[in-house]
Image 1 (tube, rainbow, N blue to C red):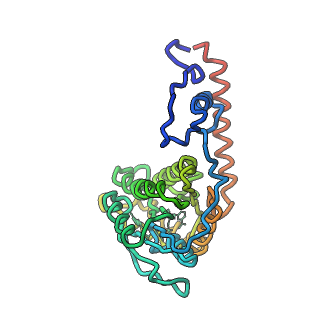
Image 2: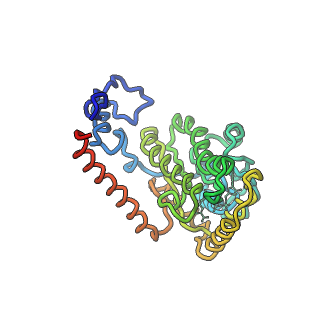
Image 3: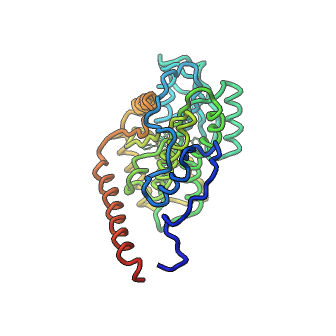
Length: 336
Ligand SMILES: NC(=O)c1ccc[n+]([C@@H]2O[C@H](COP(=O)([O-])OP(=O)(O)OC[C@H]3O[C@@H](n4cnc5c(N)ncnc54)[C@H](O)[C@@H]3O)[C@@H](O)[C@H]2O)c1
């Protein structure tokens, strides 16, 4: 190994004081925690609070929940489940439309706002309106999303910006907007980010959707640890097929400059639409299941177990690559 390359365990930890804002480090043992991270002995940053031991939310009555994409599909299912529990709900949707509440709830506890989650300035304005109209948001459901695809031979920055801007950027915008007040709140708070099975295993949903949803899973997993000591729970919802019109709704939202789909991509999306309606779960049931998961502070919210083998294959392949690397670097480091 060249002299100027430093191995992790040769680095002297230089952290001497821990800012209270950095409490995901253990203030008692910041140096040793960094040492562990650098040497690979700790799998993650030291946690002062284990999120998995924290309670869920059991007092929905009169809490204010903010649900993006709440006018249709899974979001509407979440809205109905929240209203059944007595919460006050703000729906934020690019195309809000009235919801038939049946006998579920009191319509005066529901308000809709027009919001494109990828628009940061509009997001801040709407969040301020909700706070003024309804009060402090302590439950956040970053659910709005689109399901589009592009052939790898027709990549475009417009499609990348559009897909990542809504599916990942929109989730992040919600988190950055509401987290400061949640940190200050005396009440326990909870955030649910909607990803997809495509955020756990690749294949079948296209590289754009997959990239955006892997991002949502990583963001959620990391924030679950980093927000635990602030009394904020974080869950990630990764559904399999749900019977919604997401494909059609997404087509309406596709930016003109993104260009047309290839015939094959168009057919593939038509097929996805059919599959969702033939095999997808009832979005109201998914909404109810999601809110039950908030009650138990579940880290992962999934809707079926048919992709477990693919997930295992992916994990096995990563572990095999790590073992291979360990052998290579142990045996060849001094020979190069
Ligand atoms: N339906 C499925 O099979 C499925 C599977 C896995 C994950 N998901 C995810 O679940 C979430 C909800 O999807 P759905 O199936 O209920 O779709 P849907 O189209 O029925 O509902 C999505 C809602 O989000 C709104 N929306 C879209 N773009 C927006 C934006 N930029 N700003 C604000 N609102 C916007 C739409 O107007 C719509 O009301 C998405 O994140 C999606 O990726 C869905």
